[in-house]
Image (cartoon, rainbow, N blue to C red; front, side, top):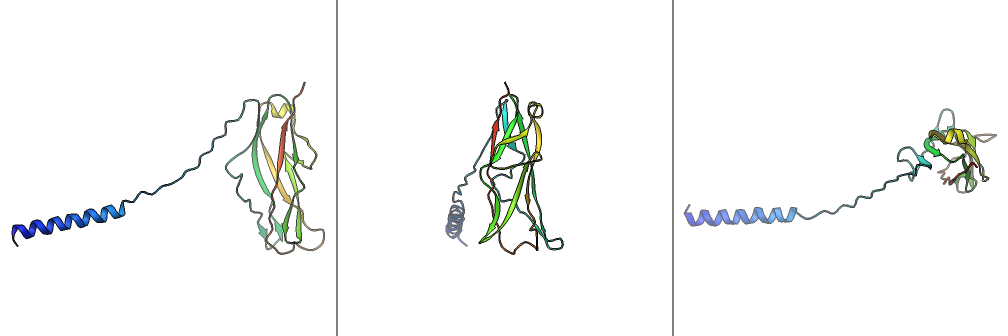
Length: 163
C-alpha cells in the first residue's frame, strides 16, 4: 500500500471516528428541583422524612380484612405556648359512591374540624417528635366494599400564644 493510500485511509478513518463521536456527544439537559425548609426557632410543625406530597398506601390484609393505618412522625415546637390543630374538612376514603370514614389523630388527639390543643405548652416549648395517625374505620357490619379508594387529608396547625 502506497504512502498516499495509507494517508488517505487514515484521514477517512479519523473523519469517520470524529463524526461518530460528534453524533454521540449531544447535550442532555436535566432539571433538579430543590427545596429547603428552615423553620423559625419559635414555631414549627414539620413532617419527619420526605413523605409529604406522595401517596400513602393503606394496605389491605386479605386474611384479617383490615386496612392498615398510616402512621408518620412530625417534629413540633412552639416556644410561646401550645399547638392547636384541626381538619380543614371531614375526611374519608372514596371510591365511586362508596366511602370509608377515617379517624385522624395527632399526638394521640382525635382531630375534628374544630381546632383543639394537640401539644401542650410544656410539651411544645422544647420541641418534640409526635405521631400522626390516619386510621380507617372498619364497617360495623360486613367487610369493606371492593374499590380503588383515595382521599386527601388537609390539616391546619396554629401556634397558641400563652400570656
